[in-house]
Length: 80
Image 1 (cartoon, rainbow, N blue to C red):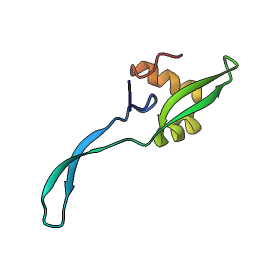
Image 2: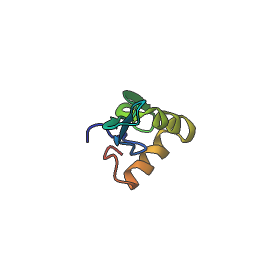
Image 3: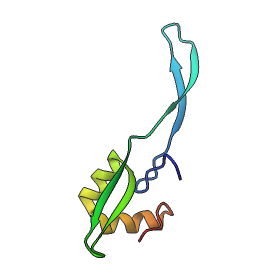
């Protein structure tokens, strides 16, 4: 499960580099991923996740427990 956010499911996308002369060559748009440890208060332990910046904001907004439950329902994480 490399280069996929474990909370939002964001992954790499394929697109084009467009030059000044409008010549197009293939390129890849990588997600903004970080490996981050979060304190999981319900289990009194740290949980290490590979999350995007949007995933970190989602955890801050709805909480780690709700974010992990939502990610497990979508089949993105198998921690919780």
